[in-house]
Length: 206
Image 1 (cartoon, one colour):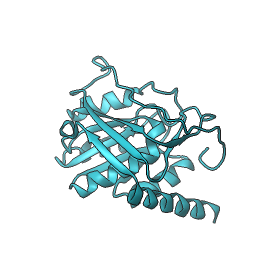
Image 2 (cartoon, one colour):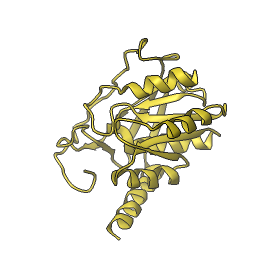
Image 3 (cartoon, helix red, strand yellow):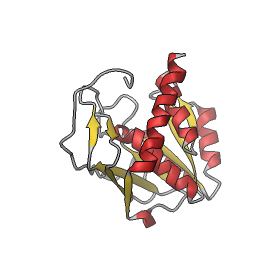
Image 4 (cartoon, helix red, strand yellow):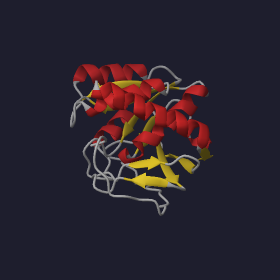
């Protein structure tokens, strides 16, 4: 019951943001609707707004999320936003799931997105899986970085999880890193403009 209530609360807040937040896209031409998409775990909540935008433009996105309980909240929001959640274990992706992910990339309107440093960090250190997927699917790696005019930052969490506030502005930047690999790993951009509204908080998002 608690889980269902929280999912609805998160979704209600997301719908409020859709109506009140202004989103600016920088370099949208860097996203070709057939990419491996990497974002930082701290931006997971706002990425639902980006996925909704991609879905409205005709793109399809499968997002890799943790298989534990936290993944249930993420999956609920992603599916409401028009995405497709693929649950994977932390630290590995079994061969069957990996094969399905790569198979889905044969669709030229399908992208796969993943929190590069998630689900447990360390912060802003990309996992090798993001490069492996780019190499094996021969799809260009697109980095998505967000900045906020006003937000709440949960500073006690490893990722400093960021939640935009209503009537704020979000800047979404796309960066193209070509087809990447573990041997040819690009330096991923960390782009963030810190606002004054940051708090220490604990609770339901842990």
